[in-house]
Image (cartoon, rainbow, N blue to C red; front, side):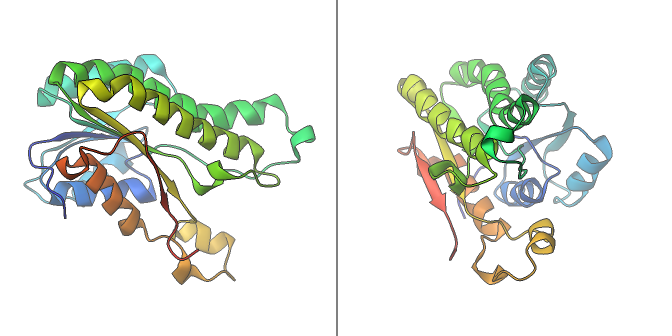
Length: 237
């Protein structure tokens, strides 16, 4: 695995399925972790799964609230002295009606959860990465960003926007030794997806630890030459 010794990693969506596994892998590689989420008890539960010697702290913030995010990032910088990696794992998915029947509220919800959450975190974190002289930003898009699907338009559009945002950020920040990449996962092997799709071939889905391993790679110095990439992580699907 790729070492993250002494790197401070902000991990949003830390209480989600992917967040928990990513936290464990980052901790195992020596990272200092800022676990970000809205529920302090669930964050505490995640922290308890990490090794006792892991430098991990809980930061309660709603990533949809730009002021709360700015305060959280300032607290992380004060606690750890430096920020090296921002992993934007917070997001969500929902099916919906046909495009012509989709209300503005549905569009707003998906764009807020999957795009504006990333923008809020980037806006607050990039100045700290510039001060540090470099860093890594990792976003989660989706395979659905590459092609629209019926009854999924707001989700597909929001994830496609994450790809374009990633490319724009990478172009702006590459001269500052800040890499910006995003992942395009296929269907993740989670309890929720298994319950929703019990007849599918689950062994072909993307294992959470496999996706987390790619995140750790992008956070590491081994990925220093990769920026502006939208990386497929499809498993066998």
